[in-house]
Image 1 (cartoon, rainbow, N blue to C red):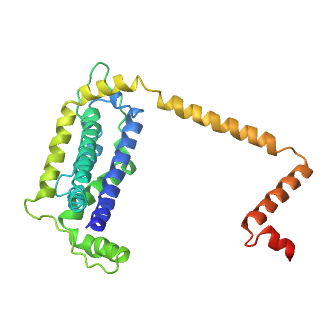
Image 2 (image 1 turned 90 degrees about the vertical axis):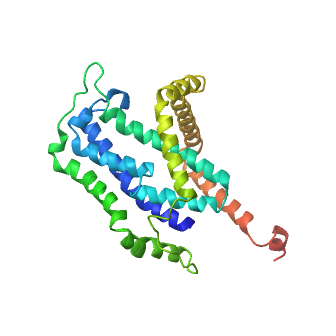
Length: 272
């Protein structure tokens, strides 16, 4: 079950994540920014990108019959075989994912302009920018609606039997009736929508708490500067531009390796 879940998630992830990346690229090229707070009402210009984003977000959220739904369904099936705590963590993480992709879709594309409208270029006149995400969106819809049999025969079952040769996996099915994984999928969607409703409050509280903590960018820059300083010190110590020192270091390191990795003790070596 876990292997089928992993393979189905890989397929779903490849389709919706690639589509989202392409849509974000179109947004950046059209508006000159990817800052979500600066983007408003892009749907009127990026119509095809909006369609691709909708399909990708629905799949990411686990809405049937898209691949993301099957991936999460089988993830919950596999999780229930292991631990209820693991399933609870999955529900929370997936709900947060639903919240984030809803923000990614709603805020830039459907929110009305506030103040100065976002200046957008009609980049979808270039077919090379809208065709790839559109094709991925269509494949996402068709992959599980009419292509689930092909996925089972060519991807899921061969993948499972390759990883676990003694297993006899059953094909992935779209509908298993009303069961616990389906209820968990519904709970995940509902929780994600609820979290999106309180999204502004959550972000305000989060910003307030994060302001009390060290800035991640500053910490990273300090660590990087420390590494550079250590590298400069090491370079100045070892790179003396004298062949005698280079030779001493090389033969010294070789001697240490020979002594520490020799299969016999020094006393035995001396005796021989």
